[in-house]
Length: 404
Image (tube, rainbow, N blue to C red; front, top):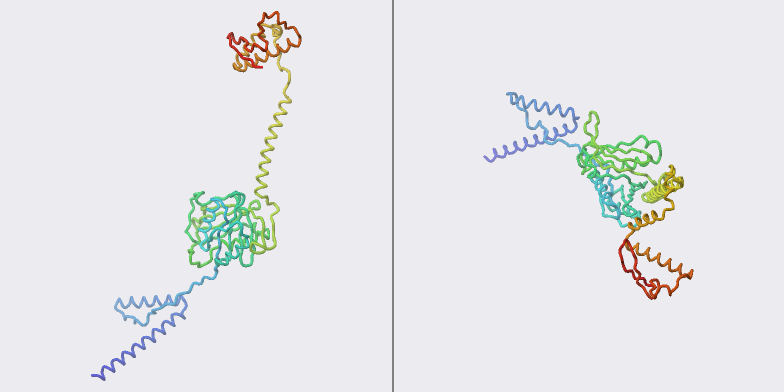
């Protein structure tokens, strides 16, 4: 009995070794076979299984491959973009920065940089964050002006832009929508080939905004497109959703902004100036010019009014009634007209006018020497001793105290 058990165990071990060697040979054959032949072999195996179900000879288990080698996906383009800003940017600028972070899954963030620090510190911050590209937002003039720095940290170049006409995704509320972290298509205008500095900016934008292939945080889909268009020497940025692949219809998603290039430097945030925009006007100078235009408009209005007053005729332009000369020297009519005009004057003003007339008459009588104290019977109403004068104003008797 003991010998039989040993023989059976030896036979079982031999069968197991043969099955193992056959399986290894099959796996090696599958790895060497091209994809089409592999699919054919799998279909043949399925046919054999079907034949076994129909009553044919069943296929052996050792003939089927157990492990199939999978193709390794390599992530070679390891571009990382550092997106952050300086202290002093506005709320709309901060929302634009957040939108770009959402659209670019290969971006990294950092806290706001102090305004007293130099821009060369950005290179050290990017190296600490293991980033080789950078987008820096910088605010000036009390959050009125926004500047954008785009830089290649390793070798340069770097460019400075003035950001104008900023509209965020939350502000626009467009109908377009795309998958988050999906890869975009980049579309550049043909004008980028017309000038050397635009060609440099196109390559810089391509390396910054393009999402690397097989990035861990990205989705393997192309459902939106970034467009860079040159109009009036400015770069217009738009983000569109690809609705259908057949006709290529698009729907805008946002954000949108305009980049006015200022300078292109040789290195990252330093170096020689490779190109400078000769048509660039600072926002401060633009605002000053607008104020001058408004002031010039006001001066034009004043001059126009003065010219109109000078050109007006001094005499009447219509024929007068000849009967008006009859009442030219009518004292009674003049008195009535004066009373009517006095009624429109307030009471206090009438009192002042009456007092002024009395003072003038007194001074005139004193200078002429026509005043005789004996004729007044001791009652000189205009004397300094008597400060109370009876005045008739609109047939009303009122006492007015005159203080010398």
